[in-house]
Length: 382
View: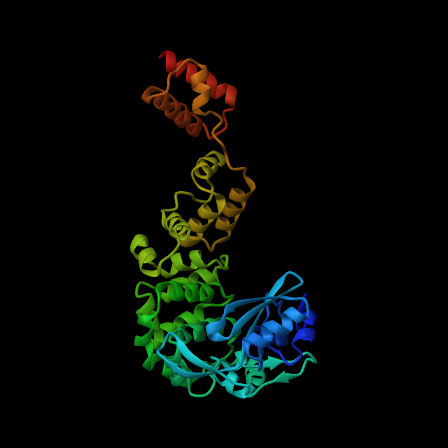
């Protein structure tokens, strides 16, 4: 059974509905469940009528695909009418509603995602998903090639789920089908590809999945700059499991071109660029050098550069710990402080401020406001 706020209210209104997909998988693994998707043999209009009659809010969030969001206890539950695919083009599917649970499960990607659970906790598993989950197998439902051609993103999703749930040898049939259909991945939107790549990189142990991507030819399609051995070195050093740090380790070539091709957000591109800047710190540096570095960049950026440079040895661990322990310096003067000293707005004010700032940094970012003001006065009168 799954305990989740609002779920009992939804089931009271829709007793024939079942939990589907990832929530069932994660419940069987004992993992925390972030959200719940449900399916129902009822048509969307009947789902909305039932929910509203029970005093729940029902929002038609995706009627073309049969999806209604039922809100209970402040949480949204996506309830989708059972479907079967009529036609697909590798990215989108034309569907028809059905009342056949097995037919709906057959259109899902992997066996571990094709299970459903009713309100009594009974598991419906038409394709051996529970056994695969226990064995750490990631298998496509039905014919792997057919599932991939329905939506080429499933090729990347295979590696994402293998990185998180796979153990032992990968499914050779799945890899052969992915390799044979890898050209279709090139037609996916950059946003969808980057989303999946981030999830692969964030997995606890992504190295095998990335290596399999290389062996199947998919990595050359989506990330030709990547060198899997670099990621393996970073993971072996037990660096943080951060997608952008691992992306920087894999190799992105020109950051601007990489960010544009995969449609990274501005913040992601800026962080990746910061990570890729040269590491200027080394074990044994005095605190003054660390404070100067911290004035320019936050500790997590400096730590990332150390990991990417050569960060596995114990002395680098000590350096990262020192960076975290030191407070980040803040230059104590602003332009208005110089205005009070009689300077007018303009180039001279900026020059004086830069001179004092450089002097403050050269002294290890330690001088207090009063000292900086005294320095400014000497620069003004010089």
